[in-house]
Length: 399
Image (cartoon, rainbow, N blue to C red; front, side, top):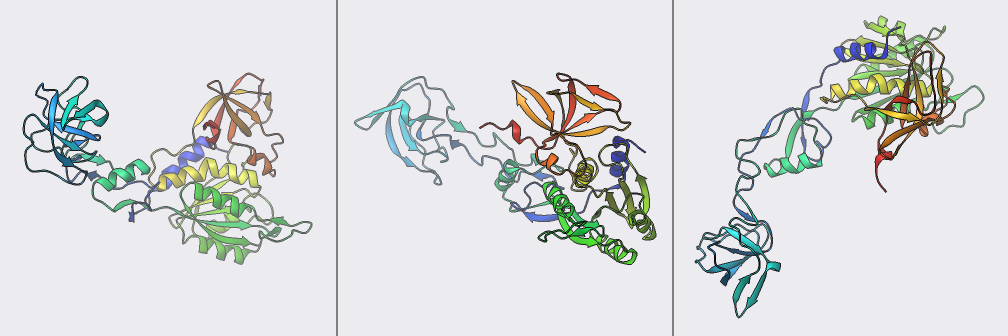
């Protein structure tokens, strides 16, 4: 068996970034840019008023006669005479002859004469041309994750589309005679195919598009046909059929399809019987059939690969130090990824397990927002520090 880190490195060395595509700005939200975006003009384009007030020339005078009104969206070519001020709205272009703006609340007006209260400072309350970006500046580097702020910035460059990495398409295949589809009432010996839905949800959370292949019975030709169908996507994920049973056909069939098994079995609990192969240039992840083992394996191996394929530079979940709220024992020879509930208390992370850690108990993941990384042959006491891989950070949000 190889370590989790070794398996991750093998996968990341094998997968490549997908081609790019041009999308509308809202479609590109959450994607990674593949082009450098430079400013075609200065931002702002001119000197603008930063607030509602009066534009004037700061010549040392404190009284001004009012000489017109300038709303946003309009400009004035006629210079404002010395000793006069123009009423101006936020976003209006500063007229010729003015170099400062005083807010409305800092003036008094008597008989058409404006009196400024407080100290006058040249340039006050003006957004200067090019103070944010000068024409030709690099505004959005290639490889940038497009958040709402970046979408807004690209809009100011006059663009309505942007080139980004194409999202991965991940084909999903569940194997096993015992499986029945969601929406049916299982009989004794039958198991609802939850893996396809939980893994599809993980794909969506990672920004990928799931392609549902359904269930392959433990029959050679049918499974082979389904695997071939899955190779039309960017990657293929199977669950079940990867252990050492008489009907565990997946590894053998991947080789028959021309694939190379790059590893099988990882030193981890849950999720030891994981295989990774490259078949016809496509990455294939053969995950365990147990629901928790499949989802935990996805987090360690498939999600980082998806993020790399989509162009992300940060591809691993954050790992933090947390205080144990109870003792945790790992007497085994493999690292144990213990499902846990993490809280933030007085600036420190605290974690407790979600109880029974059987790899068939998906309910242990519904109560979990982190995985404790407990080394082999280790007993940790309450109050000890433990590394925790955070699966989500919603618990850090305020009320």
